[in-house]
Length: 180
Image (tube, rainbow, N blue to C red; front, side):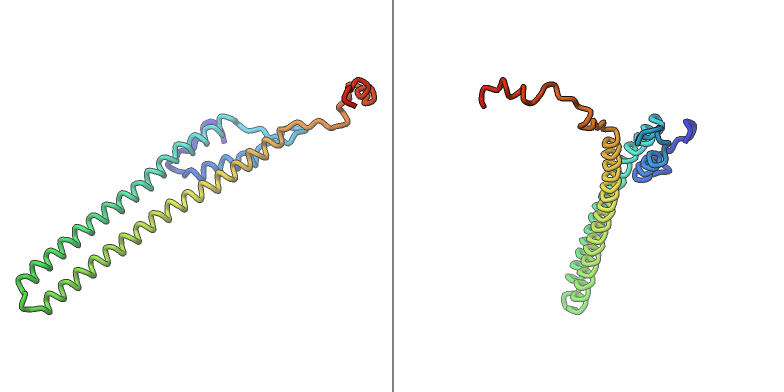
């Protein structure tokens, strides 16, 4: 990707941005005689900044879903209460007709039950959506952490034991040891 290309958070979500970073690292040119790769720092930092900027938007979307669920529940409760009140008023007017009162109560109960079921379904959908997003973030972050750990392992310098020279003869070291 060149400096003129730039991803916007409107076109890619956080997971896609992080996966793009991983792909850049996977496809980067190797440094000669090394396990390290050369990457464009500005490009990767830009992608990571876009991913960080996209996180709050996804969280806002999840909060918006929860708010809409709460508003729907309140509206359903108001409607249910209005229907129950209407049923009560009608029942009072038609006390002698018990069948009408019974049907109104049954109808009101069905509406309340339907509203509660719809509310539970909406709540479960919102929770599933949030759980799915968090699970995908977890997978991407785990992959990124593994890639970072592997990269750090590759950068570790290992000195073979044969190259280390002892400073003194082991017999001479024991000569001055007073605890023997």
